[in-house]
Length: 342
Image (spheres, rainbow, N blue to C red):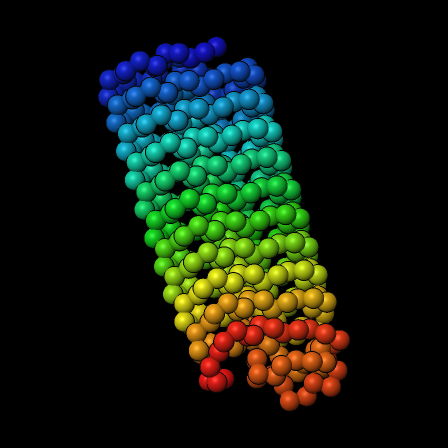
């Protein structure tokens, strides 16, 4: 039942109480394309189209919300359907390809008022919403997603901000859970690999304070590009205890030319590194650093009984007792040209 009613140019105000359709659409047809407003509409259209039901648990597998893919006016009230607050059984492929075009500078993204619990989201729900150039200020409270994402799909690439964003973007994207013990094996946080502005609030996900079961290869390839002189490196608010970190977590974060002064409180790592991986090369500052770098990189402990037998002690101002250092860790960190300011 193609509702090809309003595909033409309508007047600025049309009372859309056409059919007074039912308040319950649990058995909608598999292909009911809501191709209603795909044309240029006037600046203000009351989108209370059908007064649809508040519960859409049995929506069809292919209900493409291809409603606002065209150029809309600067302000559109996106309370389209008053959809349900609980979408536990959404279809496997519900592409939210709604705002992929150039939108106006300010769009209220309270699109669906989706549920606060998305434990059974589909395996491939690409949040390819803001991949285009957005305006300097976009309220990214898109879905008000659940506070608990223990069962997220294995491949949910957060490829949201890979383009050039404006200098200030509020990165409270999803309000994700504080506990990510079961994150997928390959969740590449390839979010800020492009040139960002000098000041980016890196409270991206508000991730958990305890990452004991992180995946074996979670490369924090976030700041590998040229960043500005001052970047607040409180990236994830990671846990103070990393006893079970993966065997190969290369901290290849600052291998590029950084500014003379970088606050090296990168992860707020634990004061106890007894069970660190066998080969954790601290290849962080192998490039040309300025003459004076504050070497409080990890806030390491005052007791390094299990460090390697050969450590160049001009690195961290390490402890005076290295009796049980582990067999070889070449801390070839500052093999570059440095002054004698240490």
